[in-house]
Structure formats: structure tokens, C-alpha cells
Image (tube, rainbow, N blue to C red):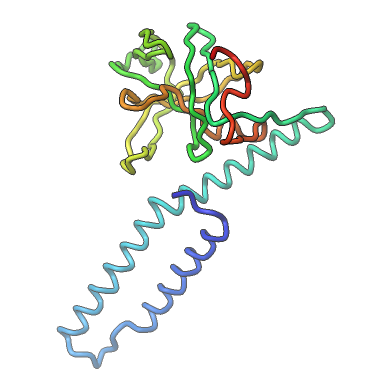
Length: 222
């Protein structure tokens, strides 16, 4: 679930109010020992659960909003004084890797923070003291391609199933419409998914508007 800024404010306020109420309602010294021990244990358990939920789900959303805001401001500064028009893209668009040439019919997903590409048989390698990954991917026609790319980082990502896992993140040059873009892409086994490439917000932000009623707006192979 993606949290909006107002909702984040409400949740944070709720946590603060709850913690204040817990502090005010803790049993006094006059409370029987057994009842006081149960009450303190109960309050501690609830507080811990709220803290863990905040740290694992709400805090990452706050950081993401801050990051996206900085990216937008940076792009606005770069584009100041230049004539630039946002492009409309559909729910599905063609995207092509620059090296090697691998073409995908990609799903455009504004709910995904980062681009994701199908990868199987992933093997991490050390080359001259740096981490690389060798993996196999499939293009739109089902042809397999083996790639070797430098690892930028490992990122914890929550999939559509709701389960979080660590993924390798690499940097790729892609052709999206008539624009050549360098962007981060995380690697994930998408064997059971129709589209082997997913375009996320890190590629779209500041440059594109998504119209889900359309498809293949940027043109390309039909």
C-alpha cells in the first residue's frame, strides 16, 4: 500500500497520541503486582508492535517521499530555462536495452518505485575487487540472453505477493521511445509474469505522464 502524505501525518499523530496515553495510563504503585505486571507487559507489547510497523512500513514511505521530492527539485533545476514537455505513455510500452540489444514489452507501473527486469540463474562474481552479476533474461519473443553487469547495490523490495526480499540493482542504458536513458533496474524472477520488464517511478518521474487507457503510445513493434 502506498501511503499519501496526509495519511502519513495521521498515522504519525496516532502513534504519538497512543504513546502519550500509554504513559498516562500505566498502572500505579497501588495496583496489585500481578495486575501491574500484566498491564505493563500488554502496553509494552502494543508499543513494540507499533514501533516495528512504523519502522518497516511507514518510515520507508516517508524516506521515499523525501527522495522523490529531491529528485523532482533536481530535475526542475536542470530543466530551468529549457523548453521541455512531458511525454504521455500508456500502460504498456516497448523498451530496449542498449548493450546487448534486448527488446521487451514492458508494463508501466507507477506503484513500483524502481524498474524491474526478469532474471534467472543469477550468479554473483568478483571482478577486480568489484561485484558483478551474471544472469539470463528473456526478450519479448522468448529468446534468452546472458548478461554480465556491475552491481550498484542490493535493495530490499516488496513484491506483488507482499513478501519482501533482497534484489540486485544494476544500471542499464535503455531506449524508451526516442529517448536514451540510463536508469537503475532491480533483478527479479518474473517467469510467471506476462511482462518481463516493469517500468517504475525512477524512470518516469518528472518526464512522463501515464495514461492507463492507452497502450504503446511511444510506438515501436506491434
